[in-house]
Image (cartoon, rainbow, N blue to C red; front, top):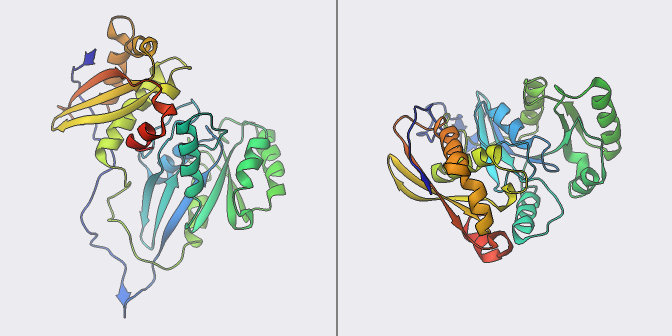
Length: 312
């Protein structure tokens, strides 16, 4: 089953730019007056890490869904300011793994905490501080970490206060209540994180906001729309990969694990697949010919070699 109609769209994805005309000054081989570094966000699934990075960078870097474990890759978002460049690492939510994919996702998140300049533990203000949050915090050096309490726009004031009080036991360096949706508290958070960075070069051009290749970005965009329109039990079994890129034609394979799931993705009369294609196309340039094909790749997320080939 394919979905091959085209619709008008908006400009897309993470751009790549040329070398900056505003590179930091260098004197005697040393960068002067400029700081740069890497910041990683870690936390349980669905606490809003991807939404935070999208809000900070002012553009969609990572896909967003209300379903846990949406992010599977380590994705970098880039914020360039006049005197600093912050490179944010969006990580998968840490959880108890039951498949090879889950183990790889956890390993990706934990690895991202190494060799970075600042680490942030993200908590959900609408939830109670639980064993899972403590489990994640135990993997961090909290004395050098920043706690971010997200979703203050939908949490009650007493919920935000309760989460801050519970998190205070962690002994973190700083605590910031924020809302990725409204932007409240984001400016102060970014200023703080920038102050933690060492002197260094500008790693990326001014107009580059992500290191994610365009092919991967499109595949993730399609998966995001499928998460929005399919049933709750299906998303963990969906993977997407671009298999053809002959501009303006793009073909994306949607992988499921069982024949019964194929029908769930396609929908009656192709309705679900068509809807996902329409939603994805709205975020792609005009004239793109996006073809979606659904294929069965039996138990793909339980096969380590297949998980690795898919780039997870």
